[in-house]
Length: 351
Image 1 (cartoon, rainbow, N blue to C red):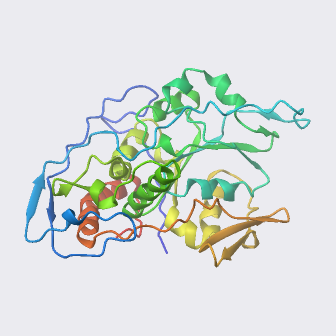
Image 2: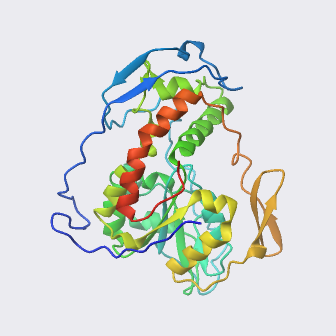
Image 3: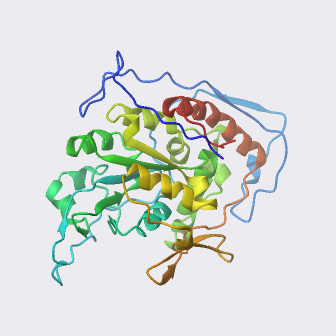
């Protein structure tokens, strides 16, 4: 069981939270990373790159935080297919409002599961799509009214919740959200950062297969020239401390509730009760709203007389990763994890 701590952040000398640019100095670059190949491990049913298996060699690369584009990332199109349903009048007494709370990330952290589970609550109205308003310049240029029109109709007693996982790793999203509403409540769901990297790869892998595009073995992306490829975007998204620093420049910690994604998978109710408390919602989500689906291997939702599970793309099998590569990835992320724990005054059961 995790120990949950609360912290009320106050302005400190040299760190002023605001909706404008911050004067906080960037953290120093991480230390060099070494890959020490030790054993041969069966890589998986996913693509295998035999030349990655080496012995008795040590390689070194100077680490640096670089937003280099991941060659396996799908090209992200704008949300042009998002349209407003004008075929029927809205329910009487409802209106479209900008969100009271936003699920800001992280990608492959469990954002869809969190949104679907919050949708159980009668006083929550959720946006149907990932709008990418605050992280995509083309959408942000369309203005706040365009954004508001993409929100669901809600009653006065309801709160509107939007989720776009890309916000957490966006350099501009914190300042833009703060400019819209500096008192907004933010939800951030995180999981073991190593598992998140593998899940990130898996999603892109299957997306590329479905679009008849070439794929690569995960080891070929995690390792370049014998060293850990810290420019791989999936790794950069798991540097939680770097992204969290950016959010804490604009919001106090007590406005950001962190949901334990690993705990949500195994026992959703306690995590959701904490979210209800954070959002000042009356307790309406109960254990009877969930049942474990043995076939899928995770919890599904039961509400309003209906049962539903997440899309079939969720819970896909992960590749078996070369053990030496996996350990080096875990070692590299450990210091970032420790820094993140200090920032949020809380620890997680990440190895």
